[in-house]
Image (cartoon, rainbow, N blue to C red; front, top):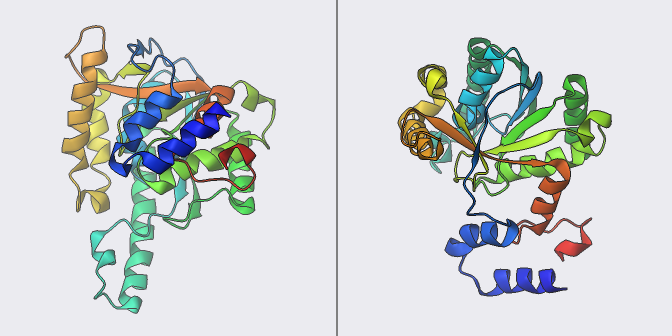
Length: 286
């Protein structure tokens, strides 16, 4: 009852531009605790859920390289097709036929870039090809993702943190939640690690990526279609430099930060999220 009252007050009275930071404080116990260093990347089977081709390179590209270097089998699964990833497509003066043709070319370009990135990083790659902006846990998407995951049986899954700002990013959390319900026994033991792209995570783990930072930058450069609009290399290098303050030798090198938890802990976090969309099947969200 108290949780429902808190969520109602949150939605009713809090300004939208103040919601993210307070939501995290409401959800997380000890959210001001210093993140623990990730001492090794010993997991042998790792899956990365990337809402769009380039999110894996931005949010956890250094971690992927560290896992591969440690001998892990890493599989990247791209969720959406990325058809809206060019600012020119949002020009209202663009003719529908020209927009459709540009989107087809962009989807092909981004898939080719994702394959080149996976080859360069030394990992496998797969595509669900859901409509960009339309990621939802519908029956077909859940079934296909569950099949991918059962084939990999990962010990660790990377995905965008639940508070990331793009809808496809937090909808990927919903999709994973539903898919795990259909997976084998491995799904009860898997750890989830949320990475940051469009919003910083409240980190409880930090990984030193100094030795692979230059390679992360070089591989990110393969996403030429996305670098046309945003200089992600500069922005992410700044983020990874800032995150190095959380390493034992603070301020040295580069680091990636994550929020890690078990599946039950992740589900509890997701269901406690005050600003998440109401799920018709979740009575507590009402």
